[in-house]
Length: 604
Image 1: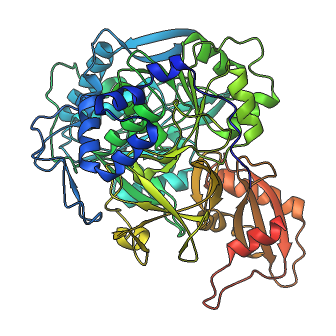
Image 2: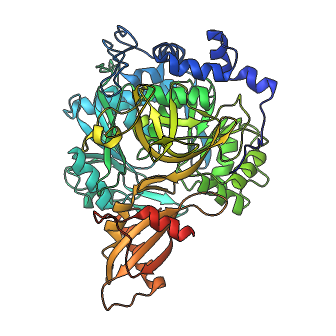
Image 3: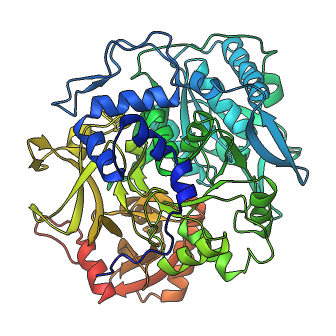
């Protein structure tokens, strides 16, 4: 078991400046452990203080902070309130930066006032097109200025954003449109990455979108009859009041893989971004005037997280529309004056291997963060040093939580690849075979603002609460991660306990991968597992294959064919590490494939 070995310790100036310190002073609490303890013992008081600190805007304030705390599946947050969370993104002065991006090689700043003007053009276009509140519109494109403007405009107008990653193949886009019953898609003509041109509009058409609104990036791609250019969709703008509703009104549908073929459709409401913004404020120490960068897109929860955590806290988001592994991105971080930089571990590994930070001044960066995959301690320590000796906030959570359940803070020592605290307002217990353990499956102690209470295409109770144990009288919520308590309040991640994995920072189920690679000739059965490399780091995809009787399979040829299927029909970001051929797969008495057994056997 690894013991906590801090690589960074907070100095007096960092502690004095931290948002979490200001909150402790306001509440007259002596230290961080006392703050966290209070946040879970008085959840109503904690979230009331958070909402006040964030400056959340209401058309009509809530009657109380929460009702029904005794039942996490039916609890009501902010009952009686009417609100539109997009309005809280514009509560800071209009002349302050909202987005910093790169245009024609130069850094360009968009103010809150300008962002608001552009959002009103989307609202005008939404209304002119005849869309009513509640109408679902998908956004399938990279994390660009237009994507952010479209997202906020749809939410402001009372619509629902259906988030789709730009990297998905047409089949996966079609699945998400089918699940949500969505016909209208905002996209762009093409994607340019590392000098290569990739199709985007073409994929949306192939996915069966009935109507597309297309941003022109210069690809000179003709549109289908009935589809419209982004510029034609936008209205003249003006002043439109945000469409307010119950806090539980759905504003965004995101997807997270389960252990069956279709991904889980998870609704975000006006409440969910409050959790995102809280995590940004107290765990990532985002202040007004900061610049936050996180290579992401709206198909991953970190896309909406970035919008809300930056804008609600008075910070700007930095958007770079190209490959983040490049020296270009590294220089953009410096040129944009990024103060909080989010990463995924595979990105850090690429920077380190390519010496990408050599000669680059990252003195503006105060805080680093990492999520999406298990971190590698060596890479993490390298980045902390390369950025000038700053803390790393390891951050783990889920789409169905609106943020993290475990993280770190800038007022605690930073240990590479370890978490120092459950997030404020949440607690967790570890269990192994139904008993409390120091290493085992994570169960969350609900409730919290941000925790989902429904799924669009699953039984929510079955997914998160059925047959879970109780702890101190509270029904625990299943999460599925495997953590180890390494002492002194620190935890280390050991991947998933179920059949879901994180590949390249994207959550995907074994079943989704298996469904795609099963198409390869000569394959009778296949099981997909994720394994962690020695020393930790991003998960590696291993496929265990059983051949059709009488067929001899070549591992190298099989790997190439399966990688082609994944690239074409699922996601090109998912890379196969190894293909192993066996005569059979281990199964339970009910014929379920025992992937945990396969994982253990592979690791020896």
